[in-house]
Image (cartoon, rainbow, N blue to C red; front, side, top):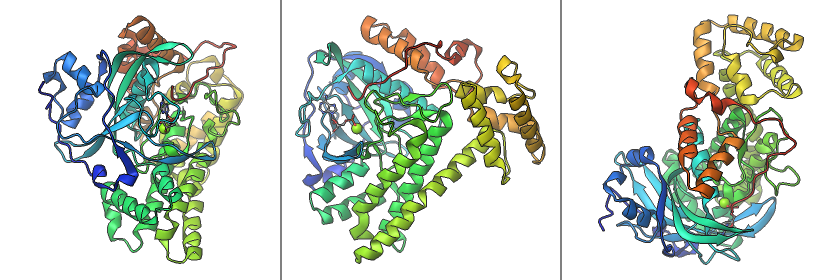
Length: 486
Ligand code: AMP
Ligand code: MG
């Protein structure tokens, strides 16, 4: 089989010392079949997947056949899970290597669900179809919402079943990432006492993700500041679209600033800062409105790993790291406010903007307004046409907002355009995602998933034929719950 569809592997991680990983091939599966291929992503990576037969594509994305130039490995890492330190590692994933696109961008190509590794602990190394399709849908939706994220190139079924509460069809997801280096990768080296390793990894990360930092006075402090900045920006973007990651453990926080690990994540419908979807997040540690705090906590764990590199005096290193971490809330707030201004069509800045926004959000929470539809409906020249807006408190807010808009030099038309580009019409709503997953994984019917994908990957365009995807779920006693990494 000729599987050279344009792979250009250049495996820099595999050149790092082996304490960072275990060289290992994926475990072949019995009868792989393509469930879905992401042709647009393949194109942008410079991969001509259409030159492959379905069968060859299935063998390739199952890991039964390795692309030329791959150097497979499972990465070692640790992490704080819900606050508790654990040694983890790729227990069900294999990094095939790093592919260079025709424009010279570097991406990890990883198979998830590819069999046991030395890091599998009690796990079977496998994944079920529905959660892999879920990751595919939500990661592609996030990308379309202009949010940095890992992406999904393919899902193949394995022809094997995985044992969960019931037997389920097995599948493998091909995940594309700027890298899979996590806060937990650094924590792993600290726990094994490998200070030289930390420097090596930090240098690798700087060279790979933030080369402009290498010439700064203190590149490691600059690295900490940059990762703080990337994560503050990322989490602000999550809040702005109503995304709840659900499992913000330090092993699920990338150094590149991409969203990773679509386990129990979900989007809010009605606006409520206390929204929790994950069945295992009993304390609400990772609830919607708590995500900035969770990010700051994780970044403090990252800062700790860098202390010996930041300054030879531990005392001074701690002062510098603390300064950096304490800056997080402000950096986050600035990104969030910047994003909220865009959602409200504001080009200029006024001191009272925060209050204007808070008043609207409070009103939304009180009246259980759908967050996505509420903001989208505001992008109109008059008070939106719906009963809930015939409310004195809302009308008063609307008057303030209109006055605020009129104080900026930009036209109302430009404001509306700004709003439409920053308030999605369509998000992957939980009931729609579930419906698509059930059809695909239980009936082998992929048409609802393709329809949903078409809708969520063009979220800002007004398209009446996608209007059904804008309807919130019917009110019900059943509270939507998500389940982790299965
Ligand atoms: P996650 O909750 O997806 O972030 O996974 C946490 C850890 O559990 C990671 O080290 C995974 O590799 C590992 N893991 C999750 N599912 C499995 C599985 N089925 N077999 C082996 N390891 C797993
Ligand atoms: Mg994970």
